[in-house]
Length: 418
Ligand code: UDX
Image (cartoon, rainbow, N blue to C red; front, side, top):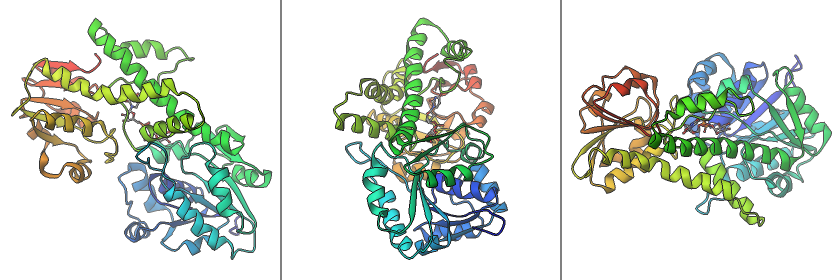
């Protein structure tokens, strides 16, 4: 603890979640040590350069003092360690715990040397049971250690905003002392704090993401029907949203949900449900709908260009959503693969995500400007970047997967669900 009563916090794993947690606590005056195995990332953070594209973080990192290091031993100087490693999916959909388990083992080694109490907080998203079955055994011989799970609800693009002004904080605990310390750390965040056991906290996170995904597949299904009936699903969603029991968020119909979290958390929950003998019918159907939805873009395109062989198709937007350069599980991948299978030539543009997309498709497609894309025989809009509202779409064939209103001026305009 520092003289002012602030804590010394170590954050292990400096991806979007870890770095946001580190910057967020540093902004609140705590001393923060950031630990990551990637020396380049560590150097950048020490030079106050944000290693990921995340607008709020990029600005905030310049105003805080974070000591970044590759040395897990530095955690010894802290009172609390947050484990923030990613939990990607394995081939069977279940979660890969490597980036949580390995740092936990290294931390366990370090904490054996500590003489005083230390709190370890799991921030990574895990399925129910992991803290008890995997993390506790790793840490149980490491001296006086308390454990909490504190799931994150941070959206990429607005991660720091979500950290600073959360809608709720969930703390999973199995002893009062550990829970009290974490609860005090979050004092003054101005939102409800829910304290539960480990499994419940883990399930709150999984069920939250599953529900958001369900809303998206639900509105996409309604939207697909609306389109055939000549109804605007965005008007429908607005009308539904006024009912507080329903709410207006996560009802934007489109090409489906991508990104690192929603898809993999849902598959992990489905795998877990099956493992315990439950039948996750709704969740499986949500995933199924989400696989099919982007392919509607090709069906709509073929209403106007029946054979895509040799045709030049432009794509505006590759990131899984605006405000990020992240292309993990972006629906643009499915759509580009399907277009290549049909023999189309593809030109793409994204204001941020082209370097990451190049790593996936390299020279199979052409990377150009928005004007370059608009020379194509038809253009698909896959991410709702603001700047796409400033383009000239007249005389074009546009298939819109994300509701860019300006594109309605096109000679031929098809919205995916409207
Ligand atoms: C998500 C959760 O929102 C966050 O709480 C969690 O901790 C991490 O995972 P994120 O992956 O950043 O955050 O993406 P989010 O903003 O939730 O969007 C996910 C996908 O759903 C995007 O592809 C987005 O375009 C799509 N989406 C979202 C819709 O298609 N319609 C909507 O109404 C909302």
